[in-house]
Amino acid sequence: MNKYVKIAIALLVCLAVGYSASTVTRPSVESWYPTLEKPFFNPPNWIFMPVWTILYIFMAVAAGLVWDKIKEQNEEVKKALLLFIIQLTLNAVWSYLFFGLKNTMLALVEIILLWLFIYETYLKFVKINKTAGYLLIPYLIWVAFAAVLNGSILWLNR
Image (cartoon, rainbow, N blue to C red; front, side, top):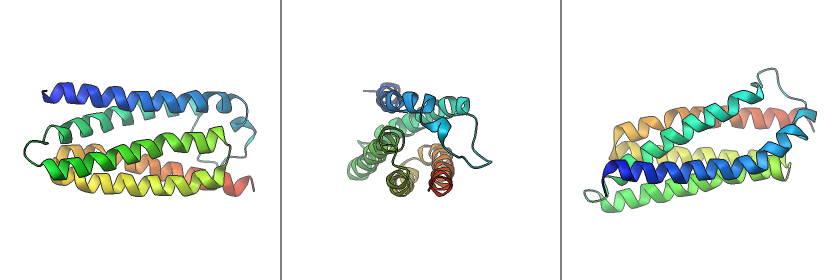
């Protein structure tokens, strides 16, 4: 299997996770989320879909580039991809906690754990393929911002 097929498979997986999370997010964005007090730096709702789409594409390309090195660095690639799958799962779980259960406290704890797993994934990816690691930096920054936003919403709505 060549690199582009691996990237395409990773893209399908990442976009499926994003779509799955959006099915629980969408109804709450229209009903519950507007009732919350939000900080002044809360972005408009329309920005989230394009940002997440770009981030999922970056993640998929990163995963595909790492996966492509499996013959040369088998054990390291397997560890890196396991971390990738864990963080991707945590990514989806956050939407269910925040928007599905409407539990901003549990979502905050989980997003911090998510950020730590993204960082660990970044550390593994950058050793295997620098470009793959660098592609995770916008994701790290966005999730850090999302964690601050989550914490602010928790604080403002206590």
